Length: 286
Image (cartoon, rainbow, N blue to C red):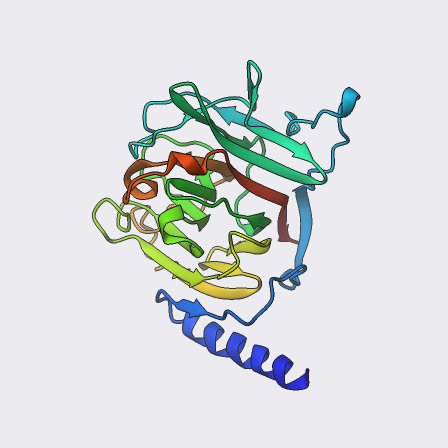
């Protein structure tokens, strides 16, 4: 056991050093078990959370997410990425795409007649800087595109106002999870986005802890406490390269298809597909 512990520390140290240079890092550690608890960086305290522990409704029916904490974006139209799904506000007629049961939020993409329904939900509150964490189990199937990400509260234009992607994965590239930022200088449209990636062999079968530390000086992405992404503030005072000094809110969604999620087609036989969220926690400096 001592050897395994020391090996884990060595792997973490090597990755942290690589991560600190501001470059993308690909880490593959198939022998490390999924983390059930990761220490919060020193100096942070919990300011917001949803543990998704609402009791079942009368008759044993699952609850829906707390509307005092979350709001929904709804509709189709591709969402800027030619996505296929139609987002609903948790429930549409008899079809439920966001439910809370057994202490877990489940976002479900399901085929209903001639369309795929899913959910895109956002925190009502927003924050400037902090440590943002969620424990997630990702859906399976070609066409799935789960995300845990952030957008600016006072959004006017993309990518100028910025975007922070804490965790994204696409089903055709199963278990490769990434953290990215987008702004005018760095974005996927012109191929200059900044991204860090890890292969987590059990991302679709087990829960893992995905986190992001955002300070005035840097943005860092983590999986199970391992840093795989660092983006440094160039300190030029230029919004084009660092628009990350204003409040952002948190988003959870499960897209279907689209420019990235559907880059190798979709497999409707894998629907319904379920994205599971054990909790979302937000910490800020004391």
